[in-house]
Length: 152
Image (cartoon, rainbow, N blue to C red; front, side, top):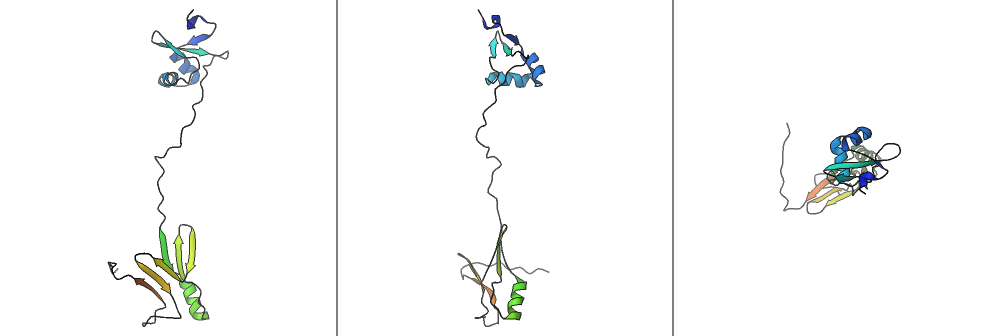
């Protein structure tokens, strides 16, 4: 007794494709992958069993690991700038609030000094100004090469 002689009804890939609203190639791929329950090949033709409703039963594929082709490290720039409003307020009110603003993504931190390892430090110190009177400056290590530009 062969599989085609059982009480189940079998259809071919064209009929299955029509009933499932898929292409014939997709139905063949599902059969090859073993996702159509009870499907087998006989004399080079796929035999696909149908349920009482006349539809082939397709098993769901288990999802594999999440793809990594689109995942990449996001580059979030860090910006260091002077908060002019706080600097003016400190001068007018004779206060010593931090005026250096470090922005990393959505996060902003106010501080008096920012050390950049291997490069130097950005300093706000109104109690100990430089000889020129500057209360805010950037100290750079002597071995760091500088590139200076003038914008017109």
